[in-house]
Image (cartoon, rainbow over all chains, first blue to last red):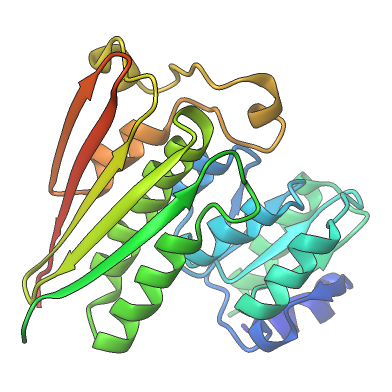
Length: 112
Length: 141
């Protein structure tokens, strides 16, 4: 499943990083502490967080997550948006919480 | 392949630029065709060390040596030094200030992550003078 397909199925809004929408999603990770996430998220995980700052984009780049999903409408700041665009990291937003978002991703990945 | 040397100046206290050096190294290694596991490990370890420089030491200098079979990184800062390296290596131990924690850092996972992702790690630190860290990731082709 690509990030674009995931976004459509979860009914999220794409805030930035359109060039990253073709990436594969093979798993999911939830976390807000950046080093924790960087140490544990796997390549191509959809990363669910409320951290919409520039450093979160950096972590997504370095840990090779497929995208960032900001839950409960957590904001993405302007400088992070710019970085996400230049780095090709898709940032999606939803008003759902992290738990429900992860369940939905689990169901979608199970169908694959 | 000959050795490739890269050097970076890391500005202090600028979180908007933190990660630029490690992101750049990652890009270079991709271009050179290194395997993705090695790239990911050195990029994460270097980013953690870079962030530490920004948080604790007002920046510093990084030099990277790219060999066919390994990637060596040396990070030099002129910060306060690490009083208790053993304690700093413990997962969850952090001296990061609150403003840094609000950015999502300061989980006390920086040095443990570096240890986890590198094949070699060495810290030379002198109180009041600074810290030098040596990292190496071995590349399995």
